[in-house]
Image (cartoon, rainbow, N blue to C red):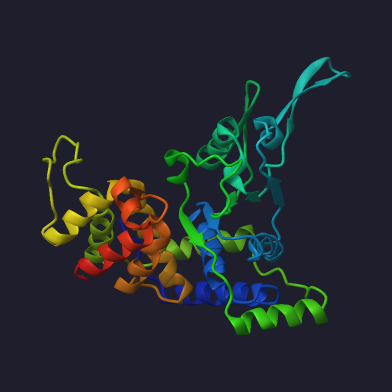
Length: 344
């Protein structure tokens, strides 16, 4: 049964998130998309993939948030020669007891910055995937639980491809959102230069903790989502799937929503090889709730669903060769879907 909306709880949560943003702003100029993405990941209990060129404060944002939250922080620099044991840990021989015991790796922290995650080979990606999905790590024959809360902020550089390994679709689907860090405006960049040249890094206050994060999650669960908006979120995700690839027993090939135009279906079939999975519908539903919560509301608006959709879907839409040939990216596909579907 859906929780009843609690306006007071939503206002309190919105104010707390506002304090987090204010503390982040002491060190980070602009970059609201990064701060919002981190908050969404932490509140939803998911992970965030952050894409941007070097020098856009991705690492600084993660470190600053860890300070504000008073949580353990671990940074892992991913490289082509990295081994799974380098992040998860390994068995070591304890001479005093004559036994092998697990030595925990750097992944045993509340907030993990997986820097340049696409530089690691498949075995390392597999080890990280277990940590992200199962919230545990296997060392030898022992399965060790990770601390709670546990949150992975992974970064990747979109302009460098030498020595990189494309992330498997199964791993991409495990990220709650993919946030694109953009260049600052001229005024923001001037503020960055003045701040670095004239000041020492400003101290930030701890305003979050495990208890506060638990309350934020409870507040998000209490945010009301109308049935029509939940259906709208599902329609958005389903519209990213090409017709003719419906394989469930209860759905016929060529299924189309009554809300979907023939032009949209034709474009999606031409541009998209594989659409977003049902996990995307779940994540979009959760992120719409959190979007409302960040604004201090106890109910979701259509704009919450639309604003969350690009971050939830951009890493889940697999483009066709035809889309690449035409220069059509995931952003254009998502924009086409959002502009074509009627609002509830």
